[in-house]
Structures are given as C-alpha cells and as structure tokens.
Image 1 (tube, one colour):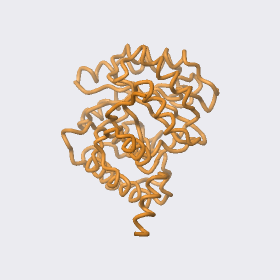
Image 2 (cartoon, helix red, strand yellow):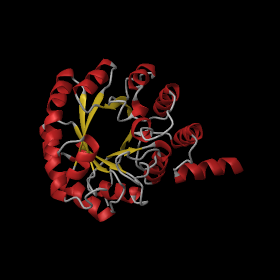
Image 3 (cartoon, helix red, strand yellow):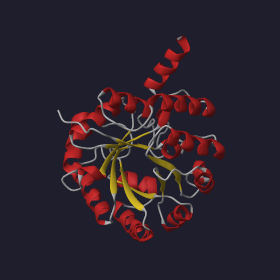
Image 4 (tube, one colour):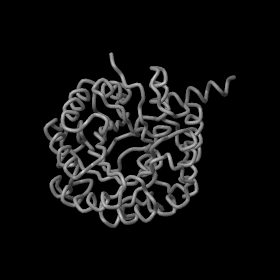
Length: 303
C-alpha cells in the first residue's frame, strides 16, 4: 500500500488548542509554546486568531503573541482571519498565512459564524482577494465535514459544494475537518477521495479530533487517499466552543509516533514534542491527552 514518504504537520495547539481554555493563558506562555514548537521542528503553526475578543477571549492577545515570537524564516506562521478587520490585524503582525473558515453544515454555520454557508462565502470574498494582493498564503478550513452536532449527518455533496466555493476564492490549501471527531476510516477515505477529484491532493489537509478515538485511523485512511498534510495539537489540546462534547485535536505526539514508526518523515523531533506537551499540560493544569506523551514521560520517570 502506498503511503506518502513525507507528511507536513500543521501544529494547531497555540490557537485551536488553547482557544477553548476557560482560564486565560498568559501571553508569555503562548509565545514560549510557539517558540518551543518551532525548536521541535514544526514547519507550520497556527499561532493566533484575529477574531473579536467578545467571541474568543482567549485569543485577545493575538497581536502581542505575533510580536513576541522569535521568527524562523523557514516556518509558516498562520492565523485565523474571519473578516477584513482580522485580516488587517494579521497582516500588520507579519502572518505568513491567513485562514478563513466555513462549514459543510448549514446548522453549524449559523451557530458558529451567525450566517448561512452562502453568506459566509460572500463575507470571505474580500478577505481572500486582499490576502492574495498582500502576497500571503490563503487557507480555507471546512468544519463539520463528517458530521454536525446540530444536524447530524453531513452529505458528501455538501462537503464538495463548499470545497468548490473555497477553491474559487483562490485558496492555496483546504482543510477537511472532523470538528466533533465522529468520522470513521471508510467515510474519511470516501470524502477525501472525492475532494481530491476537485482539489489537487497536495493542497488538501486533514483536521481530525479524537473524540471517539478514531483520529489516527482517519489519518491512515486519508493517507491512502493521497493526503499528506495533517493538523494536530501538542498534548491533544483543544475542543470547539461551538460543538458541545468535542474533545481535543489529535495529539501531535501520537501522530508523530505513528508516522515515524511507518518510516514517514515529518521533520519534527518526537522527544522534544513530548516534553513540550507535558510542559504546557502542567502549566494550564490539565491532564496530558496524548497517549504517547504520557507513556514516554512515564517511561522516563521509571528509568
């Protein structure tokens, strides 16, 4: 079976991972988390979100975070930009990639960004155009691609429809996201295979949450469909504030352990990533959600 020889990891811990924490995480901690992940070899990092602090108070210090990190020219620093104001903030702070986000589910679109899917695309039109004019990368994230907490099943046709619309905006990369972690391998293979008939496979990413423990299997299924970009979050940080019961993103440590065991290159250092995962878990006072992280830390403690 053909798997990619190299996989690109998009580390989403500093943004998607922390955005749902109730206690505000200190700006210095966020900056250090980004810097440590760069040190561990992360090639692309979601570092901040330029959204209204009213909706996501944890991301209120996006400017300070972007100004505080030590820049590595080889790393892509990404930020969410839902509107022109967010885009302007991101561009003013040296973001390399801006992220727009829609949903494959009408119900989720209304709950998450207070508008229909069609309206969301119109909102993003100017953001996409200005991002292109500014010469930064444009990424589109499509949430609830495999299931919705409000409407249940999401058809493959719905995913393909918004994928086409996002591609028409000029997106350089499109994320197919399992926001609530309900996907299973056969479903993922079907969706990814059809998405890659529309968008070149090297421009499609998988974003999986591990709510039902299926994320690694879904990454394998995606690789079988030719996908080689995956999002993950150190220590399995995360959850979605608009998706009740959604647990964290798949843990970066777990993904690295699986990929490295398969002989697939990532450019990331597993040992360093494990240490980062335990460090941030200790700081924010939550259990490390990475199975590999916990196992390796325990092994170190007994040696």
